[in-house]
Figure 1 (tube, rainbow, N blue to C red):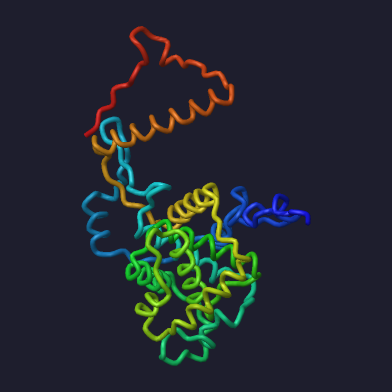
Figure 2 (cartoon, rainbow, N blue to C red):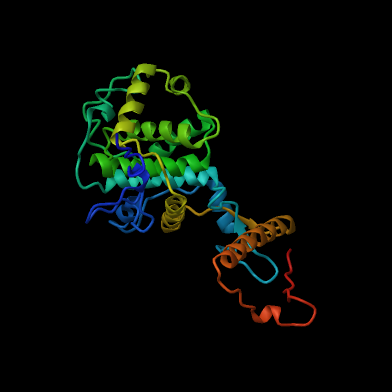
Length: 309
């Protein structure tokens, strides 16, 4: 008997066929949501809160900028994204998927008319009106808050959605966006969060949906993904930075605050650890480490003095 196990290729390592670009697998392929957000200019229209207007008036409309004495940073990084802003950006990506879709390809399992999420009757024109960004954000935020999901889970949710659109040749539309998003969140929370949320827990959040419906939604979602739930770190990073690009283009800015001494020390320590890893890997591969001008001085390496307010 011939053992072919050594020659079998894992699904996460499959090579794309000629002409195929899957942004959820290939880190060099452009994300679908960012491309669709460029279809129109102007982005979305958002009303500013009274607090935002007061801040704008009190500061004279000036934007905070980093200087020699003060450095402004937001609290979102690729490894620890800001939850609220990440959910807002993912909701905005879904909004552009719906608004700028090219077709209306659908499957029954995601159709809200056939599989309603509530006992309330679904309007006859349920598939004719695109949801606003606020409506999408409210739906996603409710699920994330109730299930206590992480920001990383939101990014993986978007990866799974775009993988579903590519593999199953579907479109996110007014008739199916809620169930598609629910299926992606359900899968992402089980795969990527430390404490998995069970299907019955989602039934406590969406009280009118049955466990059997949730199980079937999860099963078909997995089958449509061809059971490929792997997300490379390079793909995750690409989606994170593209979400930040989308936020900037639509004035969904991440809040900034002055860099404190404590955080500066933490960032410096993290930088040194990463530098040591890179140096060790380079020496291991036989790459010679060259000294920079900073190290050619008496008394050891030079260090610049940073003034932190």
